[in-house]
Amino acid sequence: MKAHLRQDAIVRSLRRNGTLTVADLAERVGASRRSVLRDISALRDEGFVIHSEPGRGGGLQLDPQSVQTTARLSVAEVFALLISVASMRAAASLPFSSLADAGLAKIEAALPSDKLRDLRRFLDCLYIGQLSPQVDISDMGTMDPTLLPAFETAFLQQWHLRFQYRDAKETVSTRHVEPQAMLILPPLWYLVAWDLARKGFRHFRMDRISAPELDAEATFRRRHVPFEDHVRPVRDMSR
Image (cartoon, rainbow, N blue to C red; front, side):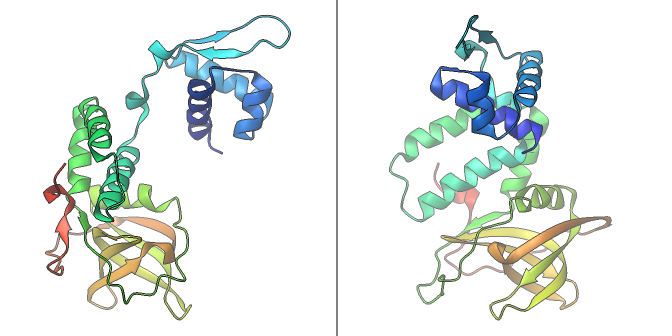
């Protein structure tokens, strides 16, 4: 686990449990005691107030007044929260939508202006619709966690993207594309891109994409993406 992810996990564990020993934290995040102590030091340097209880069996406590999670959120992380809420709403499975929206609004309000600008540009690429009941989802897999950060850079910088794609017949090919949009048809997610070799739009199921690579040497312009009538931009959804 990368250091910043491990530190986020430490903050989350302390916030939820109150007091934990270094050994407890090491077990929870899958790291050595020495790594956890370095992470605690780094978190303190960032402004988190973490108290140490002295004595045998003493633990660590996080001062709740020092928790400033919004400052630590990246554009991709905020975007992931937004699209998760939007996709659940589209699937009619979000019973506490008003509370979720209120929490997201506070997160967005705390973003620096540059991150907020990037978030808005990222959201312009997101569309949501309804999946046809005829689509077979029995083979749906998990998505590569490196996809969203790669998509963020590709969309915002308008860079070409290469990746390995496994189609419905299990044939794997290397694709070179201009990423134009993300489409959520719950429970499936798609990258909509202009395929340079095939000279046309293609919908790539994200659970079939792997090994994304950015091509910073090649840029592209946004194209008009033709969608079916039931598909709409996420910005048009009531919030």
